[in-house]
Amino acid sequence: MWKRKGRKGRRTAEPVPVELCDLCAGVFPESESVTGYVPDSSAAHAVNEHVDGLRLLTTCSDEHFDVLKEGYAQRPFVDEELWAAKLTRVLTAGPQALSLDQLGCRTGLQESQIRAGIAWHNERMREAQQRSDP
Image 1: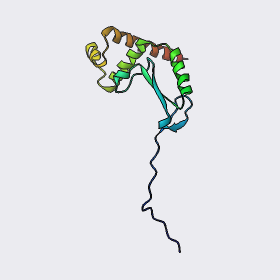
Image 2: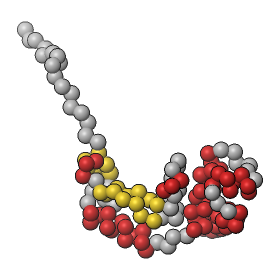
Image 3: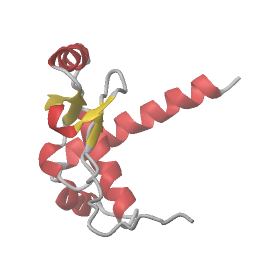
Image 4: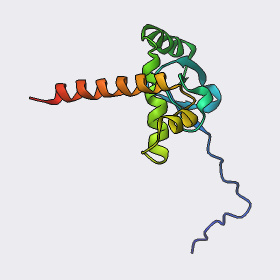
């Protein structure tokens, strides 16, 4: 006859928080991560507007962080792209029919910035449509 060993007194191992490297997709312990913000006009945070225009990078090493940082440094920062991202955030989170004044209050943008952001967005949509048309 056999006897099953009980679990009484056994501790379960706590899971170790892990991260994913933005460059190599390697998984590693969170405590070993290298993180930081780089300028990126396409980055609009979902809820924290104070980091709009900054992209949070997470990597497994200083070398990988430097590679990504250099890549973002080569990319131009386009104000209109950031304004379009801010507008998109507001319009996808609430009513889509807002006046320019309401958009200004919710985004912190001036009317000229709102118009430029919309124009930038519309031009990107036209370009995408032209690329997909046969």
